[in-house]
Length: 133
Image (cartoon, rainbow, N blue to C red; front, side, top):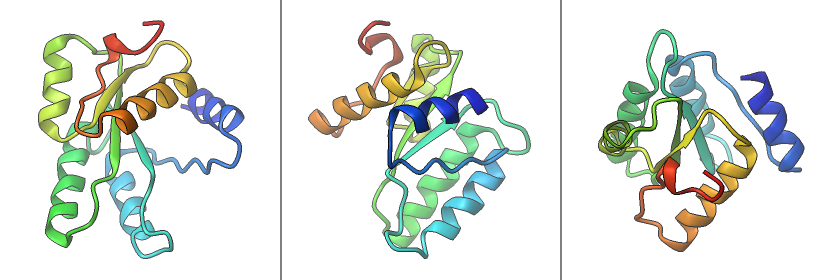
């Protein structure tokens, strides 16, 4: 994870990276930030295999909170070594906006995924369709 954070910070000046050790902490950080200005994250990069509360279950809880409170939907990208079609379909059903693989340049993958989301907001960003995949 440290490599991911460093890569994002190095390639995205002015970008604040907030980390959590597990899905439960991730939800707690998200809720704390809902009360700040601006009140939301621009992007959540969710590791699927986290301890305590896995990424898929954390996303389901985040989406429920957004619906219950009428909050805008935050862009959430799965980051996983499991990027087969069935895995990506599952991530979409959980409420994620896309999936990026754990291998490769994470900063470039995130930027490519965000560009796709800007062009097609309703599209699910598939790991196998990112440039240079």
